Length: 277
Image 1 (cartoon, rainbow, N blue to C red):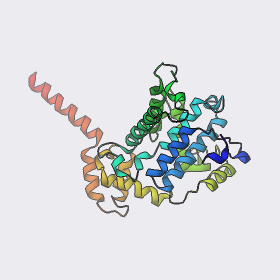
Image 2 (image 1 turned 90 degrees about the horizontal axis):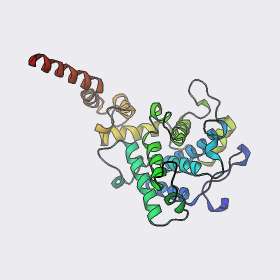
Image 3 (image 1 turned 180 degrees about the vertical axis):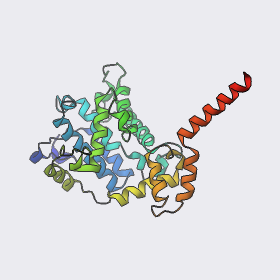
Image 4 (image 1 turned 90 degrees about the vertical axis):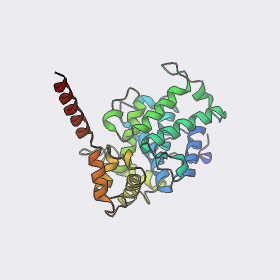
């Protein structure tokens, strides 16, 4: 595919040849339709970080060969769609699921539609039997897992499919740049970082923008945030980024504290058993 036909330019000065494919271009069009510019640029940058990390890590370099490979396309698709849970088209998202799960579901449905409608290259998904013989569902399931777990490194990094770990690392890289990984840094060179960000600017994706998104989730569907990192935003900054509703949110979060729920449940059961003894 000619680079003039794709929104994903090659970056020869840092050695990146993007694995262009019709389904990833369609995925970006879908993401652009339903998210802000700050969000979809974050998603695109994440795809580039995935390619850079894969080149530098022996754990992931096999995902790029042959180029383009099914694995690299899967990672790119996952990163491009990973924040559909932040969609501005609210009819797409749920009231009762974490944003990562919304994003994973929307991506899974996107692939299913693409295959059903016979999009260009759909046979590469529909006909792929995968190592476990589950057809396009295997690749779709990897995309689902990569998106659902992209904020949960303690699981994603140990997933049996390396695409899931790579997607997580790439997405995290967009928050840290040359400081990635924390404490070590230097995996992404400053010139690599600058090259990607010049193509897909960070505008609107600073700490203020992230607070707006996360505090908005705490306000709009708080029950999905209490037991994960999103709830920390509500407890720290309130539901409006300025402290509004913070105390109420903290009280509600404490009621849903998993440790308390488990220990209280076991105390109750122990008491019940003593009464029966």
